[in-house]
Length: 492
Image (cartoon, rainbow, N blue to C red; front, side):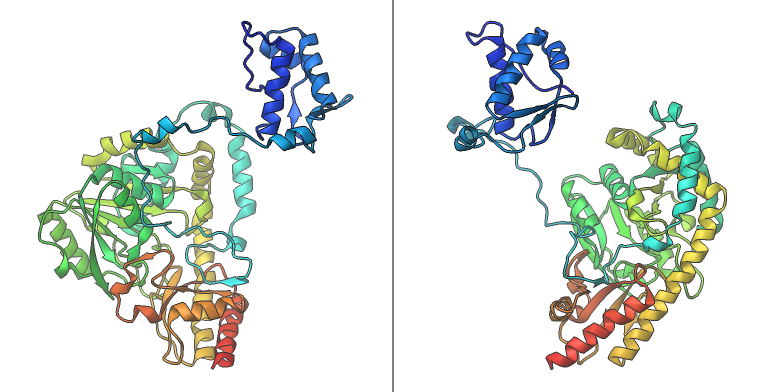
């Protein structure tokens, strides 16, 4: 362990006292924490290039003054209680801002319009939370994942101790390309696949490629605000275009040149609608005429409970204008931070270069484990089980709403991991119901709060609630709605 000490041989203060004063200052000002371990006198003398006796004498004075404790055969530690004379001086900042510094014109950081909304600190008052963006912890294949991870560690030394392809390890990219053929109707090669750190990094990479100051970016309204806020960090100008049950309203797209359009066609966030095939073709035609790239965020396509999934926009694209983005956040878990993009040929070199500049590639071990998980058929089996589980929980939401509220008005429940609930007439506005529910330990989230931007573009948005449900068991789902209904009854 090295400690930041600097000895000045030209100082009038002897070396022992310099060591004492600097260590005492480190302790007083909190850089060395109570109970923290100090290096041995031998190690510190070697670090500073002084005799061991010099360090030992400084340590003895620190012990005598109550700053440190020496435990035979165990080591030397910072005292858990501060000496009284040290406490009276108080902690002092290492550098104090001078008056002359106040006139320096330092650039202000980007503060944006608030948090993207996917992470929220735990609320101890909430017992059952219908928050979007969570996966079912009990469904994670931990035994299989642990076994595959250990297998990968067996030969990891060479791969971990060197830089890997920033676009991702070749075996994982090939397996993803193979998977996208039958599952999404896409004919792609591994060359076009880039591994990213989840959806947010994929959106970031697309923004870095396409968005500059005042660049017009079309987005669905309502939409995921984490994407909109990110485009704004690059100086982009977000142009909201309303959605209906068939996705973004193509007839209301701007007639001027646009560089990028962000859409979620398989399961629109947050309404849950699916873009019709007719509208997909119209959107591709508009993009070709406008010279726009389409960022297709296919975040919920693994989960379809009714009907067949429509072809991805990328599979219908004949002009090389679709950037496809997906992730394993919904199928395995957002904590894994692994996703992938399929990039048109004209963007490949620029996208791979930018990926290298951003992080020099995603962590090798997680990629290798995921590749094994796909290769041995575990992903296919896992998704099949997960669809059955999530469909059962979707059905539990429907039946519980009908049981406790008498009527069910939801959209987006044909697939995905969330739905939009339109509150019945006897309920107060969503923001009031949220407070009432929180009082009985239940978390619900109005459309116009949390992760959603432009929620007010939907008619009756004040009475709509975004329900994430796949992380909750049927008994928890029923208990959650029962508590809300009981609280409503008592509040009348």
